[in-house]
Length: 198
Length: 198
Image 1 (spheres, each protein chain N blue to C red):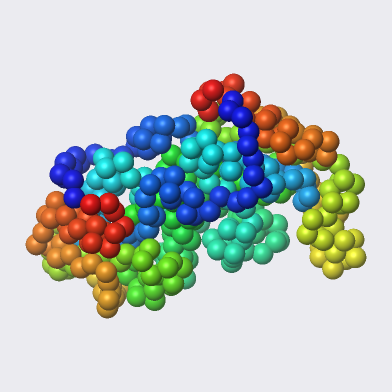
Image 2: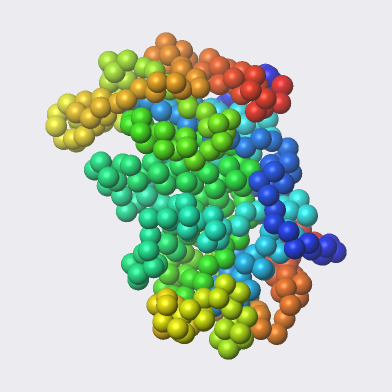
């Protein structure tokens, strides 16, 4: 054990971030199912890790089966789902981490609610803009097929609206670009904003 | 920008922890109001930070006003409060962090529910064992006084039970020790369990 030199002070967000030698922020990916959010989120997470930044990805896999497993898919639950993801992102950013979220998050008001939780430079909304037809053709989870068959309802793009961001920090034409190009665009943005070292 | 060498693999908990050169775990402090949870949590957090471990503290201040601000203090809300804190701790441990929680968490079943979320060596229950009379005399927030006057109800130790842990990893006689002694005890335990480097 090292000598304990304990000062009765709290460790601040700045302290944690400076220990990590990084600026914390959240990259909020939004777009239709099949627009490539998970793929890009994984690519960003792997890139940050390789560059020795400390990042973490929140997605349906680790949130819907844990923290938000009590929530359904009705309107009220969807709002609460996004609110909690925003609050957890805020705690993680406070802990000094770079957070990447990958959720459809179809409603503008929900995304704006989360944006309000952060200082302006710590919330980066990235819109994966892909035509519905392209997403539906990709249909990686077979969900569009089920939605068209009426086996699932309230599916974004089919019988539930997607409200595109009006002023996102980044727009990616994710039906035309591949993930490496998207990654480059996001990383260049972060470098230009001095959120990553160059 | 560095060369992008992107592999289509996910970053694992082990990857994140090894980048941080630490083992992630949660220190779950439990005990009466006034038993010294916040003081010890802050001391641990500051110690970890000074030793360049990456830790984060969850307490009423950053949880009750954010993630759990929709919850009251009835029985159902108290269970949900602890469940969410457990799930957030799990996400943070998955992100490679050392997490310290400072909540009364009076019910054995709730704490055991959280314990079940983690592998055995990643959940360290620390019981701050202090006589009610001592806590009530300290009364740092003036809450015991209000509870005795009937101005607040369902207050743990007064008109709501506290169920002491049966097999906590660490018991601290927090009405007899000072915070430096408590800190030493916890750090020695973590070193003995190889959770911290010696």
